[in-house]
Image (tube, rainbow over all chains, first blue to last red; front, top):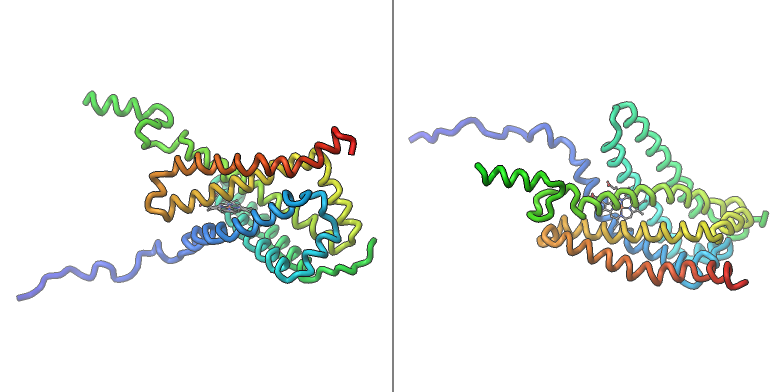
Length: 136
Length: 143
Ligand code: HEM
């Protein structure tokens, strides 16, 4: 008795599944969003609402906070997660609305350049902060 | 024939909320529009906020000068708006995650929208009070 079977139906995965980047990006938006709830809402609560809010913020206040590795780490994580979450979100928005390929390309280039700039500058400031910097 | 014809007419009414089959015009769509606007707004603010904070690397007085402009009535009002925008985005982001991952999420999406709007109001009323109380008393109460 012979078992009649056609050729294997799926010799390889279909071409459309070559990259899972968009899946990873979708998942990242959700995981980073969870972390940002604590980091960003905590930040806003302390900085804007608690104990007089923005009125008590000045250089000395920043120096006091960044003397603690805990808040340095908090701010560094918040910077990276918010910038990549927001930048990735804006990438989606550009993909949705840009009509010409060249417009889409250049808008995304501007976006990526600004992200690199902000991440580099922000990290530099947190790592090299000097509370004894000259007053003027 | 007349059945399907009448069904077509009913569905064609924009955002037919009666049978819940159309998304367009539904509060769910507006929640997404607001999520997108608040997200983009916050991203642009983050750009400015990293630049202003970077002034602590220039000098204490440069930083204090720019922060001083944040303590004015107009910027104070913008601050309240920005906190409201981020709070909405965070709450709705949580709702989006529940729709995606919780088995009953899609069924309760609308109730969850009213719930987050309720939470938003409950947080923003005292929040706005504490953010503005000092500016307002300085404006009207002398000092
Ligand atoms: C505070 C906690 C936050 C939570 C829980 C959160 C959650 C989310 C989620 C789940 C999405 C994906 C929505 C979707 O795929 O339909 C999203 C999109 C987005 N988020 Fe956030 N987010 C937060 C903070 C932020 C911050 C700080 C920024 C800006 C720097 C931001 C900017 C954006 C942008 C631009 C999008 C894309 C919107 C779109 O595609 O329509 N988010 N957020």
